[in-house]
Length: 254
Ligand code: PGA
Image (cartoon, rainbow, N blue to C red; front, side, top):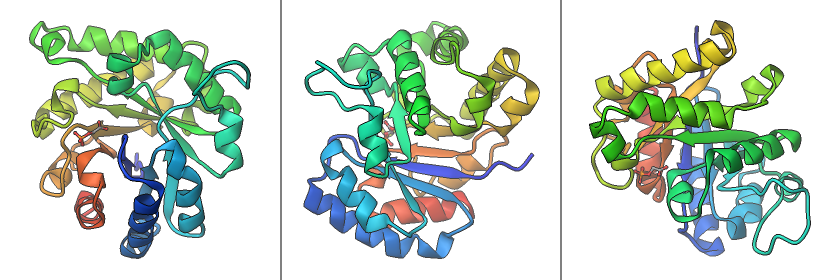
């Protein structure tokens, strides 16, 4: 079953709006030749989302947010709702990134609430899951991932599954320069797909785009995406410059 390769840049807390505008302008041009061959998105901070949407309008580069609150509105100082994101033209939203789980108290339960809110507002979630080094070394990777998947997908309708992307990001590989080997990542991706098949069905699992994230670079993108169950990447560091992100996307589909 042919799944489209999907590469998303997670800019984290980087780039002012002016810097984001410059990077979006560069990417709009450098990625234009790849239109139709690959799905690409950039996920800037909240303050740069409107600018990114405006610059990238009509291009083949989509825009995603890095978080969403589950309530429609109300007394939630500092939070942003799905309707607010949708109105300015955002298409994707990263949910449950390990940095949010680690530093901001994100749990499987809040991840699920954010998933529900994103889908209710017509936004496409990029759900992040992944084990820590301690969990991998303790042979707990599969148990941890299964729990994160079951938690995130609780009460998520089968009818919404084609809107969702999963990003498998081993925490020990994020920003560390340590990438999982393509074989190691593939084994885990296959497990994730199997888990989705058990929760839903094989057809839904086969259609699910599963990105790898964690020190993916222009040099290793091709070998990772060549694996049967690796359908793209969620990119941090290498997404912050137009030349490295463009090279990465180009190599991923080479
Ligand atoms: P990295 O980050 O590419 O800098 O390792 C990936 C991520 O956290 O999404």
